[in-house]
Length: 557
Image (cartoon, rainbow, N blue to C red):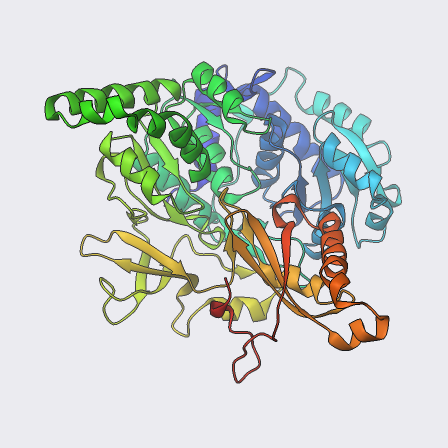
């Protein structure tokens, strides 16, 4: 297997003067400029005394500078710890500490949030921590214990001395020998008392990058519009690392992906493929395509076989043009959530170039995928990597759902400093338990049938771990226990009232709903946007429990 940094090394040298990274509608960095910025950051890490294998946290909004910072860390042979910018300031501080990061790289928005919540003083108490650097203007955002005194001037002087004529392609030579070295620690959640940091080795990332290069080939004439969160492994690898390795021009959409703005960007960029979540595609089809096809006049015309194919072909081409006109090369690749059945049926009728993949952070991320031309409706592709095996924990995998389990090159090495969670994630014979129920047909197409874990997956692909929210709710006044469930319009808290506390407080039954709602909704200020509670329901009886006194979650929707 070829190390993914070999591809990065080769791509930079081969595309030195070509555009590499753009903040859509703003600045563009060439591959050569990216190489120069990487060398500058390497000197920064040296001056901070950071050694190979040590951790550097990165928390910023999607932007070209984020990408440069990421490559600077991994090409230095340090471990990158990308943190979601949606994490609360306290979560960011906690995960920086828990990951043993020596440095935190931020942007202006994250820095502002940390200042607003007065979190910055906490960083000075972290062992061996240097401080915070701003990736946008390369300034010291927080100097902890004086470790960054004069660092910016020192970096500039060292850079000028080391590269008096500037960085040249010959200077690019990234270490790419050890596939087993830890490369990334990815935290999927920040609100738990024992968060799980997924440890991904260079082998895991390399297997994903190599698969993409082989099965979704691209060239330096191709462009991509990156909208997925770069701190998520799906966007990180397939919207950034892999296209960069192919020499593509990566345009990063830095705004909120509102359909009208996004469609304009797609028309401008004309990407060769587009990665997104089903929710966006569903909005486009429900807003533009399905109303058109369901008119009385259109239904009459669609009843005529010869005319039907012409109409479907026209609708298909119009949609392809809407996405920039070039997406048939790599296709529209969906992941992170289930696709609406009604919408998918229409997509199939018009032969829309889409495919649905399946994976998880613990696999860096891909487990199954197939080209859109070969995609089977309602599936999520076939087993992806040559070095990865997937099995269904069922006596009849084609007909009786069982847990999807994986083993091989892309699978994580475990959760950082969490042996208990690591042990629980694997079977006794070493297979990763995905927590998803599925089937596999004779052609290895995988069909997900449900989730055996408690995780809630929102329509836009965000993972929510209800136990973490419930743990907070259960500490509130008047609450005995709770369950958080996902419904069509958001997260709903099911609450069993602590009757003794209510009686002691003298709260009337007529006031109870309002009082409970008030304290539960106050929690939203402490939760990321995607985890906010939208409704609260009081339960007439305690939750049904197992002999081990665990709540029977399957009984509550």
